Image (cartoon, rainbow, N blue to C red; front, side, top):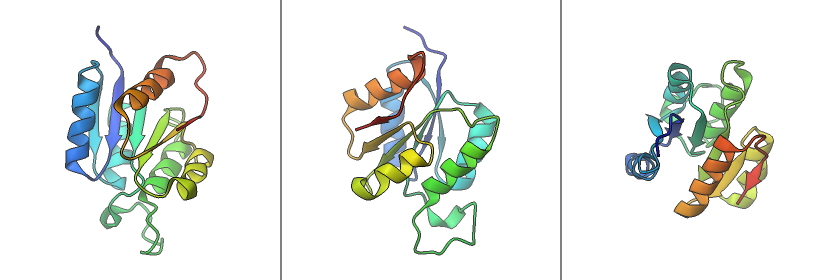
Length: 145
């Protein structure tokens, strides 16, 4: 089975980026990577992905908006805001995968434009089912796990 679907993986943890790649490459998805907020937006423009997997806890060293207080760990939320504001990539489905407090961040992520929220550590089958539904369903709807 071959897939021409492109997935942008945005996570500052190199080991997790590798795990995502192994999981998705086995299903014939093309993967691209970003490790911070700046490269996430640049990679989204460069590759025009069909889906984005986005970690909330991105490095504060490369924020898009330096006016944010240093205590605000919102790199992922800022990336999502920038992607949703860009007409060229605003409709690309985003799955937020985060180890941060699900109670606090799930609703904020879904209100901010994510189509799904998955808590780390994730279950591979659940994550793959969400990816498949968002990529191949006729009209994807918001999913929360």
